[in-house]
Length: 399
Ligand code: ADP
Ligand code: MG
Image (cartoon, rainbow, N blue to C red; front, side, top):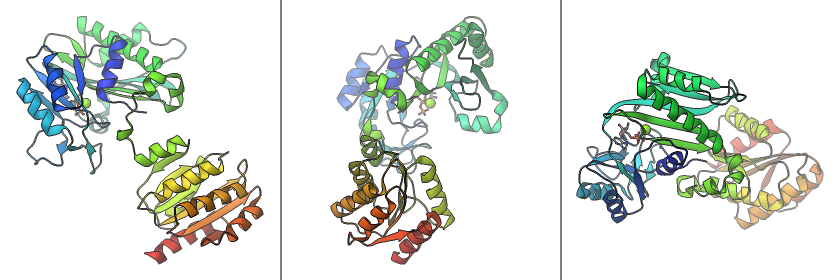
């Protein structure tokens, strides 16, 4: 689960991380009011979307010469003008994809005189199975490019969970950033506070880019991207409330209500499978047959009829879907329940695309009989390969 920059900064501030003052705004008036509460003389108006690259982004509705999603303002009138241009318009950045994201919230924050920009992140290193800190002097710009072109400029240090964050970790971060004296102390302090925040919130990533050195010698977090482990959100009710559903794919949100693991993809064959491994294999075999899956969907081991119906409806609500492949191995889940769910959903949503069903496992004969007697145009398949070939052929026939 991801949150907005302004929410991330409010959270980090509670852990003692230095951030400039700022306020969120949902309207032009709120933006001006927010600026009035800041000391000035420089303000920054920042689009709040769950994507980076906002500074270099472009608004779809404005011309190519218009400014991006992070703008400096020297007066309240400039704040007003920027807010009016940004709110409601669509910001396209390297991370949003071509469709871009509509800006519905702004963050009005203190303008800082920047002397230098660094990069500092806390994440889970899957290689070592530990929390790691990533530091680089090359902040502000695209860190992926730095990692690719000059990997020696990226420093990673693991933190042993048995000791937690130690003073030597702080010194190592400061050294990686080439800092000495008071700035080195500040860097060690920021790193230690970020580690506390990471552990304390069950974060999956905290990325600070840039971590700025100001002209008057202070370290400041100017941008923060924070994501949490969704599986830990049950013990952070306050953080769960920060979720902004408008930033997420509508179908993925709907699926999460039913505890379905659904990920929207670019192809045209909808998949309903139980078990993540079988779902991956199903997508692979669809590709092997020259077509592309429209989604990943794992209905889980013990899905109810309601869950299957919801899953089916979600797949069908995607206009890109030109055919559906149901691939269920009934181990914990019984095939007759799946069959009932498919029929209930198909009747409710008047099925207009070909449907291939491969059932195997517990009560499979009963399940197949229910489908055959349903009167629906369901194409039965014997195994995974057969199912993939059949759905691809059906979709090509219809095209
Ligand atoms: P993004 O990474 O989405 O482009 P950032 O918040 O990193 O957005 O802003 C882009 C750039 O704008 C930063 O690298 C920094 O140079 C500048 N910037 C951001 N916030 C401030 C601020 N409060 N004061 C001065 N400059 C800022
Ligand atoms: Mg940034």
